[in-house]
Length: 315
Image (cartoon, rainbow, N blue to C red):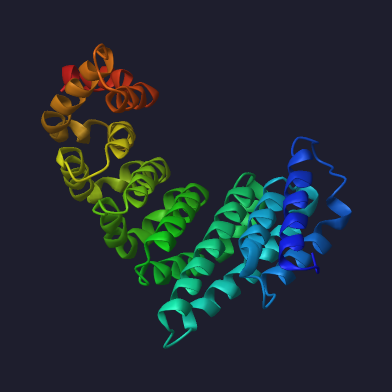
């Protein structure tokens, strides 16, 4: 990994698949004795002056993510230590001033990589109670960093930070409610981002994550969220692939707020019914329409409709 960028990139790739190979070994991994050295070597690669060549920096962070993801409980303490390291790196990117457009683009790319790394770390540490409890001491600082990243208004960073926030919501559970007043405007911006539709799709998924974390504590934000989701479904500007997950998101919201969802049924049901009918009839459709109906089936639109029909009968 100290060789020329194209060689070092291949070395990162080899390490990536080596880590993946030990994913299911149980509580002890042959890589455990080398974990700290591996992580430090990968971090050193990200700081190389030539790390921008041959996708080297990206490869190093992707490998670091995989090493963390496939790590065992034995290295949980070291993964926890990594939180502060990555937070410091992200903070550094936010302090940079008066950048050229080229430097700004590189900064945005790095912020995206760092947010992605934090997402993997949050998921790893949030997966068991002891490590989650230890990690939560950093939750406020991490959320503050993510909010500052959103203020940069870069679509790619927005997407990575949004994914990381979904992981943070899962880890913090009901306590995520304290972040909602500051975060909500960015959630709304994500749902309104028709142009970069991947950002919109990711944001829809994060709404589901937040609903599962907050349950009925999401209620104060539901009018705004549902209004925007209904606008998304009605829009011809928004890429069609984003719409099936929105129907599924309705289900997440309904599960979170229970009978309080009743007032949205009159708006949601007609859209669900037409989507369910469409998913049942594909004969004579072109390839694009067939792909869309397959997406509707994947997201179990008929199942969501059935749940809502039951809710409507109770109303």
